[in-house]
Length: 404
Ligand SMILES: Cc1ncc(COP(=O)(O)O)c(C=O)c1O
View 1 (tube, rainbow, N blue to C red):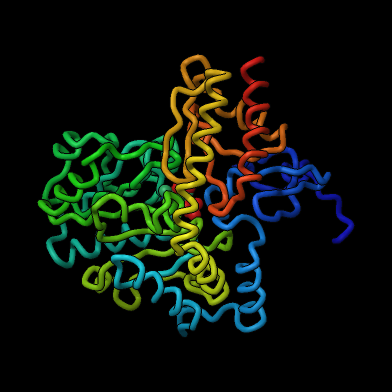
View 2 (cartoon, rainbow, N blue to C red):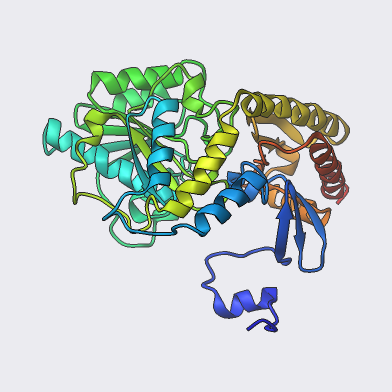
């Protein structure tokens, strides 16, 4: 096994072709740096996809993993465990929530939220209250229910009959939501800042108005904070800076700092609808994942780290403005905290992937969010030196694309 030649070609031979990964194969990381098999160094502005909130191999996470790894890995939910209860208590203490459900991914957290919203409405109102309203361009995961609730039909088409009673309206279009919502609506599902859809912030007043409409129609407001949560926007959760409290919130990605875990947070009166046997997950809340997530949570949820996210946003914006002044390729830099999108102007429309490719060649990992937005979601504790070095590489990548 150990002398097997592991090459990118092997991917095409043995893996299902639903991904098309880059040519180089990363083998180790430290902080915001990653090295591939040829020892080429990358600065990581992607953080997985907004996952590695403390960079690579953060000592607090490595220690938690090692410590728990020598104690207890997995039990099943026939027993509970200390790390899950500690993490649950910390999430409850730090947020609106009174109850937590653990799972393994963002899609699973949203699946739980959607099932709970349906069950709650059927139990408390009537069997017809099943409509779920979500937003166009929204993204909620790849299970069939969550991808159907996501706002890009292209991702859910072609798999046969979809889960029913799911409708979409444009993000930031209050009139469309007013026209769609009724007493038959059980939930409105939204990202408090759309990530995959292109780094789109809610307009002032939009989130509050959505909350009011939900209240008028006894619909639950579900915030998908899989991408925005755990410090990404500079608050522990983005809802905390909207002036609005959701009824259900989902978290994953950064929650485990790179170890798979998801969580659904809600109030006790709503949680009560998921009685024993109604929902579950073999691995959900396993001690190993929860121990790492607890260490990530303790490290991120401090005034220093959260204020640091806002400070780092400033570093990015300042340098990106300089790059744009030279090369004139972005119409705006948008987003919040360390979830930032460089929106390509008309001249470069549809070419985000070219910027990603050129960045990779220059030794920088970036993301895209649709065809027109280059997205950054780096470590929340990335150093100034790493930011400046990464942006110097980005400038060289931009020059390559602009100069053809
Ligand atoms: C807002 C949002 N929700 C849900 C998901 C799905 O999470 P996962 O891939 O962990 O299932 C994502 C992933 O990109 C996301 O950005």
